[in-house]
Image (cartoon, rainbow, N blue to C red; front, side, top):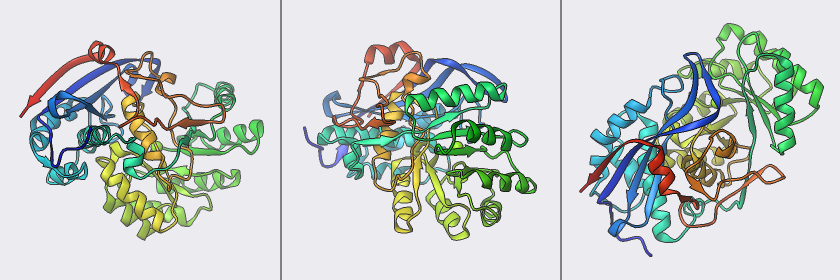
Length: 377
Ligand code: MG
């Protein structure tokens, strides 16, 4: 197979999937026992091969402004009609075509991701190679959420270390931070340890963040609200621990501003949050030129989204373990095969087949589909 010049996609499908979670996903709004996401399919000439992209939206607008419903709306009503039947000279052309629309990064990432996957499959290349990533396996870290008590937190950390994960990241909130980190350090010694505040702190909480400086953390991720790059610069200036930005960086411009302001010393890159792989690649280049490390975050993706993340993490600037746990850890049943796996040294092998390198099980995909909209040129 080869990539036609230009590539014209005549069929795209938008699917709303619902998958069962192994353990409830607890948010302020309650416990979710299912994971709803949007998948975009881009069909090749004559229908084959099919490229897949994922919008890792949440059901509520708590991570960013998007939800399953907003992604469904903007993809079907604006984004797919803008890309369908267009003459594409490269997957980056999708990013250019969607640039006139504000926001809705995850929905944009889904359609761009589907075209990147299709392009790589047509070219017979692993997506990681098409992106420029030489790594054969990528380093994985585990995320441990807030628990009822410290004893259960320590049990979870122990279990993840036993699995081989190469870094443990604890979720923290004001009042449940220093004591948790101290307990983990005292129990497990100098393991690679980080914390993620998911924007729960304010500038006046600086003393608590400064106390975390004593524990040799790899990073303090996103202490302040997403729109406070200046506040993050003030916090970083008062800390020896690197601040890592996640929610704050939604565009390449945000990354440039954060670097200029000194708002952090590393970035968590998520193609979903950034509107697709084109923007993620641009920030990766920006950071490499300045020796700023990046790593790959996660949003409870299906195997489709997670395989995209693994391909991205194969790029040379991804210097720290990513939140790349295999979907089998949180989904009862995934839609891809073979499943992504963690090796005994805490790495995920980068699939070497064409595209995202895993096959989508069409029977599983159909079984998980709540609704779909087929677009034909
Ligand atoms: Mg985060």
